[in-house]
Image (tube, rainbow, N blue to C red; front, side, top):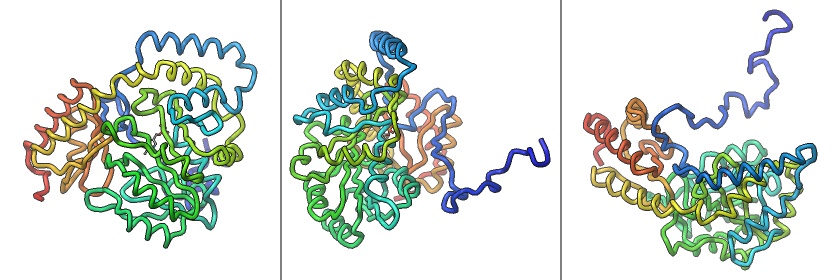
Length: 372
Ligand SMILES: *Cc1c(COP(=O)(O)O)cnc(C)c1O
């Protein structure tokens, strides 16, 4: 190709200036034996669920020539029943992953001249939704143990006056759950909406309360969940949110027409009908997480207390070298979080053993660990 027909380089295209030099989301998808980098549930669905999904998708295929049910009301009803708390379909929103749900929230409630506040370190995608919606991204720091100081949070909300506050609980990448009194304190002063992202809620220690119970008290509060993590349905792309019906009405204004495919709706409904089975491995994964944390701490590492299906640990003078050395041994983890820390997902017993063997070999080199 040459001359005027040449395919242009990216720099030659009139990209929005704030996107120049930006990279797409790209957690490495490598062909590695042990993938412990994106917090998936490592257990695939049973043959029975696979067959039922196939049958439901085939049925949906009969009307492939028609647009899907735009408001996904049957699916939203199923999600409401799954959550409980007396929720109904009109209090539920659903989209292609809770990432899309969160983009809808920012499209509806943030935007030019408006601010989005969260508590760092937190989920790396939030600042990207803020950028994409021309909103100003602001953070207040967490304490050294990654908990949120309620008084500091209230001060930050009063100073920043955010249109949207995002609270991740349990937090990614630290695993930290946020107590309800802290969420209430933030809701009491927030001038806009507050979203609690409970993507990892099912992994929280038993008795950890959900912000869902606060919904009746706070009409501007929303709680988001996903089927990507505990529910073992990451490839299905289904995230959802619970809030007051008016909040859901706001999200419907900004969603694309027919955003949720008939295939997604059909497959998700089958998975939800088998909720106990889809969630059957959660206890095992909680145990794997706790064992992993104990094992890492016994090796003299700092380990963040986790209510999710991963553990953040450190600190390393050169975390990239540790990450690479593990990858060289066939174990992919995540280089994320504050400098010097790494994140590893809870896996199957075999995966945990491979990780431990590989990590022990890497630590044996003693070149990487920072003396506390
Ligand atoms: C993984 C994750 C999600 C879920 O994303 P999906 O788009 O539903 O797959 C949401 N929030 C946080 C904090 C996460 O870590």
